[in-house]
Length: 379
Image (cartoon, rainbow, N blue to C red; front, side, top):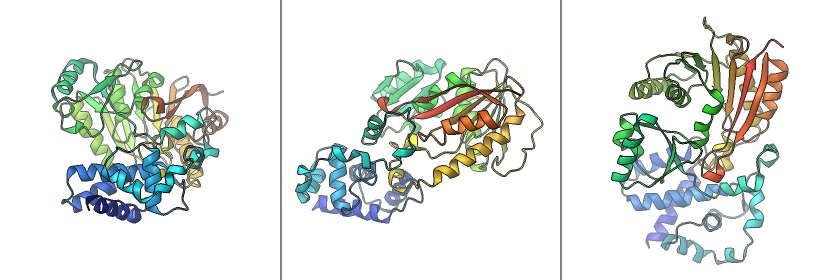
């Protein structure tokens, strides 16, 4: 029976996955090693596995198959033979009050910021978020035309005009307009951080935790005349950044591999008109996209990230002249990484807090982020 085989594969993957790498990467490796599985089987197996992790540690006393049935009922899995087969094997779940158990889904609830509506935030884990792109102003017509030609449905955000959401499982990286650099894949909340960064004409900005350059690309698109200094501790992501910059036509930048957690003072001669640090964090504001961390994240790591973030900010702030902006960003919803850290920075570093806010994205199928803008001040 096909459904029995599909269920066996789902069980096999869940049993073997230990959370040592992102689930998406693990699944890609598994499917590459099992090419006999067709695209429909892969899509269905992936959906059921992601739904399994969306319920975190709820019903952890039950075996995997029973939890699969519970998860896919809560997440309203696509009706079909596999779902019906699974439910038929566990008819007892029809009598269970599943909604009343939702508080157990997010075991890190005591760390959740008071600014986040807990009930709505928890329910957002049961729904797959949207894919968002940032379309460059001068190429909106070209991108819209190609999306229509390829029959890819999309929606434009009312508040963030360059942010468009597209349907899941769309091969965006194969679109001609993506290859030409007309748009970037970037979450809605991430795009909203530009309202706090606001680079001005000909300014020199340091992107201190640049990663693959998403924030820097957005800054250059917002103000093409700026100069960028992009650093990261990982050489591979900086190479990726350089490829993305070349595709987007960004030329006025430099890069440097730099570990801001080493405890050593960075060897930099310049000062900057602004610094942005999208720091390493728990990523808890993105867990609807990567729900495996609801199971595999250990709460003790919040303290580790908190201290790491303070170390990074302490290392960069002295390269900022008085009255210039510093922008602190996380994709976390934990107060220790956010409000707790901004209070510490205000008290212990030459920084004056101007504003801070959560960019709540769950209501729009996006991530939730935290952003704070300071100015350098000798107090």
